Each structure stands twice: as C-alpha cells, then as structure tokens.
Length: 300
Image (cartoon, rainbow, N blue to C red; front, side):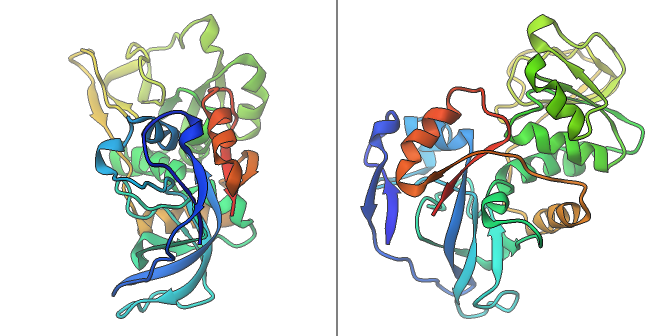
C-alpha cells in the first residue's frame, strides 16, 4: 500500500511517498481503508524529533486522525463490521500510521462516522475534538453559566473547544488575531480578544484552556482551573487556583459524544485546506506557519 514514510527526524523533506506492507488485523482489531487523514501539530513536531518522537521507531509513518471504511475485522470484534464508516484517533501516543491507505487498530479506538459530514471533515475531528472534550468535560466538568477562556481559539483544537464549551452552556471568550474574530463569533464565541493588543482583562474566568503556552493565569477566579495543553503548566502560577496538564487519549465514548454534537448541529469542524497524500510535506509546511484556521487534512 502507499504510505508517507520517514527514516530520520528532520524537516518536511524527510517525508517521502513509498510502498509498505498492508497491515493485517489481529484479534480485537479492525482493518480500515483510509479515506482521509487529519494533520495536527503533534505530527510535525514528531516528524522533527520532538512531540511523540520518543515513542516512535523507523521507518515511521506519521498520523493519528483517521476516517475511512472498515474492510476486515479480527477475531472477537462485535461492535463493527466490514462496510462501516468510522473515524478515530487510534493508538495515540504510539504510532497509528494514518498517512497510509490502510490502518489497523483496536476496534474500540473507532466510532461510527457522524452522519451528514464527509470523510475529510470527519478526519479533521478526532484528536482535536477529543482534546477539547477531555479538557472541558472530563477534566473541567464545565457547567452551564460558567465562563471559559480559550486561547488560540480559531485553531484546530480551539475552534472545537469554543463550540463544545458553548454546547455545555458556558460563556466563552476566545483569543485570536482580529482577522479571525468574525469566524469566532460565527461559531458561538460570546467575546473575542485580540491577543496582539493585550490579554483579557477580567478576573472571573472559571476555566482557562491554554492552547499555546504562556497564557496569564490572572483571569482565573480563586478556585478556578487553568489547563495547559499539551505541555502542561511549566511555570509557577497562583496558589489559589487549580492547574492541570492533559494529553489526549483514545476514547470511543468521547467520540460518540462528539458524533452526537455534530449530528445535532452544535459542533462543526472547519477544514482550512486539503492536500493529496503525496503532498504531506506541503501540508506540514502550511501547518507550521501557525496561521491556519481550523484543520488541515490529507485526502488518501
């Protein structure tokens, strides 16, 4: 099968299109024919030798976000069958090898693809949406009426976090450059802040979701929560607030909750650009500009 491989860490040039053996599902696994693979910052960080590089081996096939169709099931799988359209973020942080025509993974690392969206849109969801869901629901347990501040709110995780927080009844403040304020208002942000002109000046935020690192804890009310994604909180913060790191995990229940939000119209993913599989390096180059809105996806 075709796949994007690399044999060393480095720049976009280490990504090459080649042929690798098609995987075979072992018991409890499924074989999925990949229609689209989402790209995330952890992909290019790992490619370069940081991110999840310490858990990988060469030759390496990058990628975790998958949307496709089940082609074969291993012994013991009862929840999926050949022909099912599925999406997921299998095996993270270990290699899932999504930049390829096929992947195998535990069946319960996938959920059925939301109805009414394409494979490209579905592939843009798992890692980013699960990150937002696990922060806002599992870690912070955001409740109606609470105030949530999301930094980098127009990015891959950020624009989904804004919508998930709104779906949970929160008042949402998003930070982004002024050019993206209209986008944030359109997806439900109650208030937007141009971070190039200063920080949010309130002091009554229940939860800060810091997606870039270095956000000020000043807006958090006493007893509130500051969540650092993905590298945690790397500096001293106030004694009167809680802090938490988070690293996203495969989560079928979370995916099913995300599916429900998509199908109810409460969550929509924005795909900024798509590339064919062979142009994975160009896709990484665009992502590394840090100026994209929403997600980038490879069409396999």
